[in-house]
Length: 120
Image 1: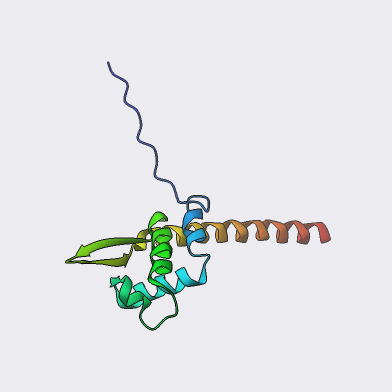
Image 2 (image 1 turned 120 degrees about the vertical axis):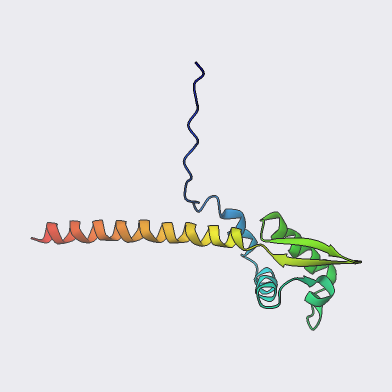
C-alpha cells in the first residue's frame, strides 16, 4: 500500500514573500511607471519615455527590476516590445499587508485589554 502525501495547505502570502515587490516599488520612477501602465495599459519603452526626462536605458533598467519582481512583463508586437503590468504580485503584497494589519490590530487589542484589566 502506498502512502499518500497530503497536499500542502494553501497559505496566505506573508510580508517576506512580498519583499521583492515592496523593494521594486520603493523607487519613485518605478512607481510612476507602474501608475502609467495601470492607467494606459501595455506600452512601449518609447511611449513610457515620451514627455519625460528619463532615458530609454534608465526606463529599461527600471522595467527589468519590475519584471524581476514579477510586476511587469514584455510581449513582442512586431518590432516593439510592449510592457504590461502583472497585477497578481500587487494583490499578494496587498494581502500580506492586510494580514500584518490584522496582526497589529489583534496585538493592540490584547494590549488594550491588559492595560484596562491592570487598571481595575
